Length: 468
Ligand code: ARG
Image (cartoon, rainbow, N blue to C red; front, top):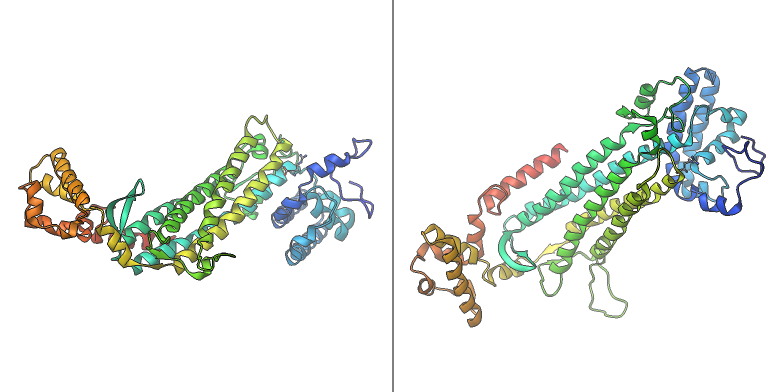
């Protein structure tokens, strides 16, 4: 705990005859990434210093001095940004900040770590940091959900072909298509809510592994630090990183959803589909080909999905087979989580901008819905309602489609006589089904694409978003 002006602050050393080798010093440094925990660390130390005062380690004026100095350090660090930590020789953020405190309070700072281990401190900081990051991701998710809903409401009667196997399947209402993504992202939102609950457990008071040696009021500390609960087992509290892994899973899944939207829209905005045109704000050009307008925003979002999924696998692998309790392996928990959070929020905000700036080409979408016999299922179901067994109805319509495709004929130019050539069960009522609008209108089940079902779903989505 000695510090000469030139030497970095150190939290250990008495038991050693010489310092750690240079290789280990370099290899084990974490300040270059855990500086992100600075504000959380200061909050934790402030609360802990308050507890040390209650326990008689600090007098009231001493505790006040510590608290004020920590506030000043927090302000200084926030103003300076990353530069504040550059060039520092301390091994991690915890030591760095105690060094700063020592500059301001002298030997008083050497008392702050009484009864506290960095093992519990880092678990605390990480949870505090993650709770904020989750909130920021949820905020960005809400922006995206709002943009999707707005676009759905604005184009409530536009139709497009729905696909399976990327082959035209059945016509859909555009808002129905968008609401599929609304569902995915609203689940992501709720999943993040559950991640928040997992992170919302206060580990301080766990000591290095066996529980703190001072009779501290952990519940009070938890409420001061804004935690809902205190951890129940000290071994678990210092070595559990479930909450971080859960966040990486939630972030990965959210990215997987984003990547599906990205893939759809990259295709839909291609010359081949021509359903959408993305805004200039979210598109880029080519350095060589003057005509290009490329969907880089969505490609980057799609690309970052792999990176974040990699972080999930990385942390899971780090946690595998770690003996109880804390091991230094756990220091590897931070970079995956920092990076996932730092990619997720901007990706969500950029996706929202893509949605907000994309224009639809409803004529092209209607045309694609009317070509390719997307009404075939409706015709087969029509025959089934007239008493034809569905298997036979399927065969009959299949034959009609085969002949029409060979003759280059689309459904809307088909007459009743032509239909009746395949089955006498076809009558006047079947004719409107040759247009995509009628097929859409038939799917009135809750969760179906009929206009009434979709407007009900839109209302529910709007209400959920408002209440969230
Ligand atoms: N930097 C460490 C981590 O991120 C925390 C310090 C605990 N170090 C230790 N040797 N017990 O996990």
